[in-house]
Image (cartoon, rainbow, N blue to C red; front, side, top):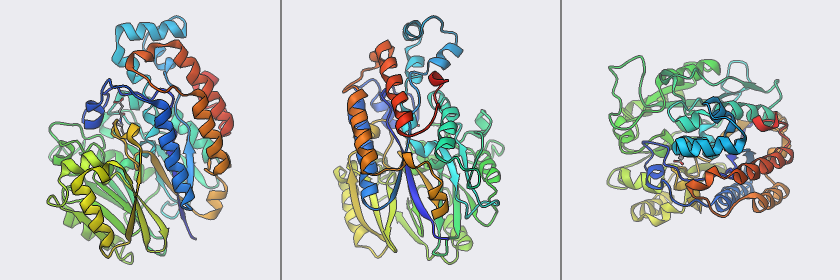
Length: 444
Ligand SMILES: NCCC[C@H](NC(=O)CCC(=O)O)C(=O)O
C-alpha cells in the first residue's frame, strides 16, 4: 500500500528561552542567558509547517508541554502557592527553575521513535517516547509526550504506543533524531538506528568530552518493542570524534529519505560498512549515498549551518527538496556546496530556505522540529484531524500565538507567576483547538 510521510512539528511553547541547558550542544551553550523571542519563535515554526503543507505534504502539529513544570518543582520539595514555588526555586536554584521552564519539547525529532506499519510484526505503527535521560530538562517530557501522541494517534487498530525505556543511562534514548528510515519503490523499509556508545560493551569507542546521548542498548530495545526484524533494521555507530565536536544527535550530521542518505564523511565510525549493509538489506532501492567531504564542508561549518539538520522531502517521484535553515545560505562553504549538489545527478533537485533562527540558537534546525510518521491512507484517515495543518488551522494557531505569546523573555522572567498563568490559559485553549482532551497536569 502506498505510504505518505507526514511531518509532525512541535509548536514552540510560550516559555521559549535560552538557558544553556545542553552540555555538548554548542549553540545552546553559546546563547545561554540571551534574550529570547517566544512569539517570533512560534511563528517561525508555524510558518515552516505552513510552507510544507503548501508544498502538498501532510503536515501535523504536536502541542507543547506545560511549563513552568510546577508538578516537578513540587516533587523536588518546593511548597506553597504556585507563585511561592516559582519564587523559592528562582532564589535557591535558578538553573533548576530554568530546566523546569524549557520549551524543549518543540524539537519533536526527540519526542519518540516511530516505526511504520510496513516494518512492524503486527502491521501497526509503533511509537516509543524517548526518555531523553541525558538532560534533566528533557527527561521531564516523555510522560506528557506519550499522552499527546495517544490523543493524536488514538486508534488501536492502527497505532501502538509503548512507554519510554527505563530511566537509566544504559538506555539513553533520544528518539527519531538518531533514527532514519530508508525505503525502496515497493515500500520496503530499512530503519537505521545510530548510537553514540554501547553501555554493555565498554571496549567499543566512545566520545571523551561530550556525552553520547543514545546507547546501542536503547536502540535495540526500541527495535524489539516495535517488532522489527534483522532484515529491516540496522545499528550504526556514530563517529565519537564528531560527538566531541558538538554533534550531539545523528541528525546534526546525516539525513535520509527514500533512497537517499546524505551525510558527512565523518558521520559514522565505519562508513563503508554502513553502505555495504544498506545495499545488502535494501537491494532494490538504487541507493544514492551523498557524502560530503571535509574539503567541501568542514565539520564545524556543518554544525554551525546545520547543513544536515535539513528535511529531505519527496515532492514528486524522484524529485526531492532539501528544507534548509537560512544559516546554510549564510555559510560560504555550505552555500557553494548546495549549489553543486542540486546540479549533481541525484534526487535532491532543489533547496528551500526557512528562517527558524529562534530554534537554531538553541541547537534545533528544521529537522529537529519535526517527527516523521509514514502512513497509508487508512492510517492517515485515523489521525486526529484537528492536528493536521490546513489554512484554517494555520489561521487559528497564528491568532492564538499573537494572543498569548510574549515578544521577549529573559531568564529572570521565568519566576513571574503571570507567565505561568499566561501559559496555562494558552495551553487550555490549545487543547480545545487541537481536540486533545486533558493532557496537562494542570488540567487533571
Ligand atoms: N534536536 C535538537 C534538540 C536541541 C535541544 N536544545 C536544548 O534543549 C537547549 C535548551 C536551552 O539551553 O535552553 C537539546 O539539546 O536537546
